[in-house]
Amino acid sequence: MKIGDGVEWAVHLCGVLAAAPEGRSLPRAKLAEFHDLPPAYLAKHLQALSRAGIVTADRGVKGGYRLGRAPAQISLLDIVLAIEGVEPAFRCTEIRKRGPCAAGPSACRKRCPIARAFLEAEAAWRQALAGVTVAEMNAVAAAEAFDDNRRRAFRAWLTAALQ
Amino acid sequence: MKIGDGVEWAVHLCGVLAAAPEGRSLPRAKLAEFHDLPPAYLAKHLQALSRAGIVTADRGVKGGYRLGRAPAQISLLDIVLAIEGVEPAFRCTEIRKRGPCAAGPSACRKRCPIARAFLEAEAAWRQALAGVTVAEMNAVAAAEAFDDNRRRAFRAWLTAALQ
DNA sequence: TCATTGCGGACAATATATATCCGTATTAGA
DNA sequence: TCTAATACGGATATATATTGTCCGCAATGA
Image (cartoon, rainbow over all chains, first blue to last red; front, side):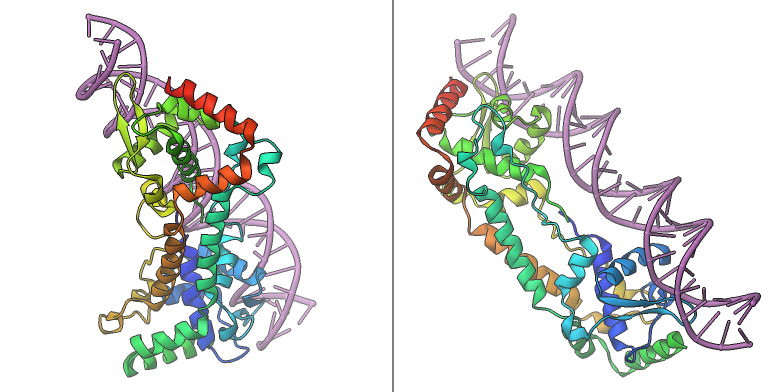
């Protein structure tokens, strides 16, 4: 059971976009540069975020990406669902309906309890991710990982990237 | 993000093994037959359960698989970890350390907050799965999905499979 | 001794994830 | 109007993971 790299990329980059001035957008190439990511592939994930409304894409000269809503309104769950899709990780293939002791319609009135248990566990996972926002991630990172030097370096890069 | 079919198979079949008399084992072929699963591939998952101690394998004539401990002591988490491995689904690739504003050693004193959030969410998922046992699954299934007819059919199959 | 069974390695087939490229549409500015 | 920059989506290629089979070996009960 694995989560693709795109989720990590997207969360980090939403944090970067949250630092840009309201209404200003950063192009794909700059976002890729910031974490040394493959630009062409990153584009696919950015497009997924765009389709989900998490970011807004502006085409044409001076185009790029900006957050679709306030960073406090974007949860890690929103990003995961946009990138990985909304399907649960556990997929019940109804094997109870197969074989010499197959469950008939009457035995299947209720959903398979095993699937129920796994979906409930996933609900707990989703709830935890829904409770964390891009804004909070940025606040924690600012406190833990940005001294004055790095903050200056970031501001300088951002200014140049917005050009 | 997907969970492999092996997990579903393993949970269902642990339920079957839990119904066998203490100390009696069921061979791979019978377990595969019960849910119409590919025997050769199922063998791989059963071996993983065996390595994890969830089931005990008996080799030779009249061999097969039986539970390694009481069904009330086997959680869905135990089975997931045995089949899917213990690695978290979220894999932090430390992209914060790359690019023009890379986080240096001082900025990395604490683990990346994004990774922390994802690992905490997975902890909630694991906790939910750890709270559900094979014994409970069987009790729910017995109440919801087994009328007298199906119970008889299952007993008959089990008797023949144990032979 | 033999038939049955699990174990693990090698291998093959298929699916998914990762990654690139290109033609098209859009847009700001010259 | 023209041009350069940009995102979009489809097609395609490659790498990795999953799914699945097969075989030789070891163990075991009859």
